[in-house]
Length: 77
Image 1 (cartoon, rainbow, N blue to C red):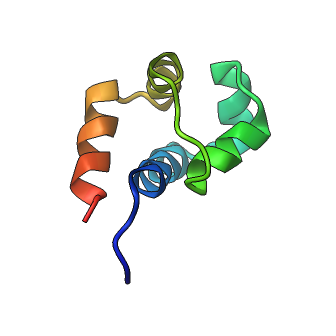
Image 2 (image 1 turned 60 degrees about the vertical axis):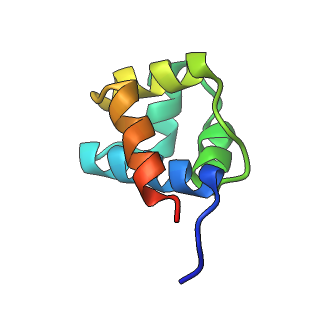
């Protein structure tokens, strides 16, 4: 498997956190006040979140933003 880009690594972390919590992209989007299609774009590595968005997602996903960033950094090869 090839090296992941930063957006792809974040997308994988986001998807893992979301599925671990057992919520859909739509549920995450509603709780974070974002569009469902934006969540899909993030998870596929086609967009990158702003700092505000990162904090909103982390709150809904019940993790710290620091954890999400650290896991993303570890996934980038």
